[in-house]
Image (tube, rainbow, N blue to C red; front, side, top):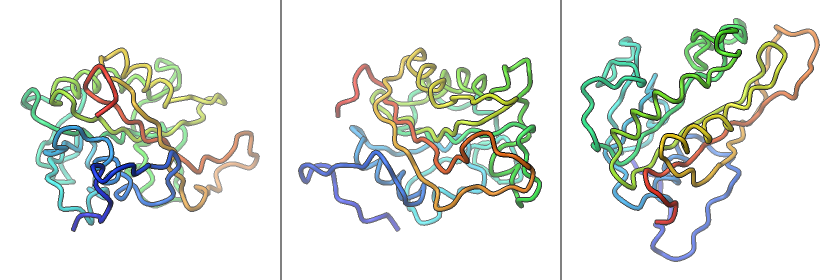
Amino acid sequence: MLFDYPQVDQGYQPISSVWEGSDGELIETMLRFYSSISPEPILDATYNRGRFWKESSREVVSMDIDPKFEPMIVGDNRVMEGVPDAAFGTVIYDPPHVGPQGRDKSTKKFDEDFGATVACGKEHDWSLSYLYPPFLDQAKRVLKPEGLLLAKITDMVNSHRSKWSHCDFMRMADEAGFTVCDLIIKVRTGPMMSNKWATAHHARKRHCFWIVCRNSARCER
């Protein structure tokens, strides 16, 4: 079923810049709040197990590079071979959040949930932001004019340095021709625990960012 949120045409219905609910609830809220055209069909370019859509009846086309998840499109979201131009009202993007150096073997399915198998070494400046530009070019191509790109981005610490992935994504999205409209902080209910480290040098991240981009020269609906 769809989540029961107020329609944006009922007057002033604000959306908070800090969200403490689930990703699925937030996505539905963003679709209702930001969409200026029909948000469907939706391309989930990093589908995985489809956890965003467990309680949704939205028309979602699933894409994943791993065939074990049985997506509708098996492929790399940096290429999107065979996906037609201007076909989608929304693209959802939840890329890897940590590299292999940050792998937490104490947590089941950690690699799968956080993408900790993707290369993130010295040649990439210890960052995963190199994944963004080719994806953004493809997202720009397959989105309809005025369509939305909703991206879940998490900063990380790698090689003893903070990597501000959300800043990289917003800059790169702007360079790709999107208008970056909003930034929503999504808070987790508890910290990600690990017995890997004996000493803490950085704050434990209990949040991620959902970045709202429009395939348009302006943000306003």
